[in-house]
Image (cartoon, rainbow, N blue to C red; front, side, top):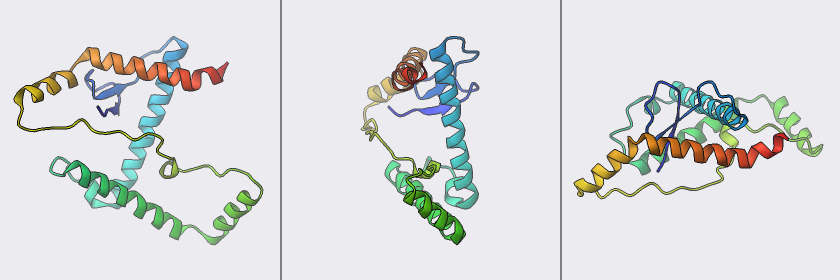
Length: 164
């Protein structure tokens, strides 16, 4: 199931990953710091896309998931092309010099690689019992806590050991 990075005003549902309020444990502090940073990055990205492309400002409920994926990908690609076209020539030369000197250039949010693919949960649309099961699972505080704990442990495994 997909989830959204959310702040404290959202309910404890399985589809929202919220930060931990007033974290005291090292794992909780790391999780909250990363969750808040990633959430702010996503908000900035959407803000940029919304200011540039009217189609992103509108409601998405009427669109098919696959169409939304193509729309967002197209907007990101167009944004990158516009930024690349607006970049002064001297910045391009300094980037080439950095590559020659093996100095890494900081990747923008738009250039970060997608490391994992996910498949959305299938919907049959005709089974009311399946719909109700998904409805209750999405609104489950237990599923929310489990997801948050799983993500916290995963993050600690990936980044926590580097802090020592």
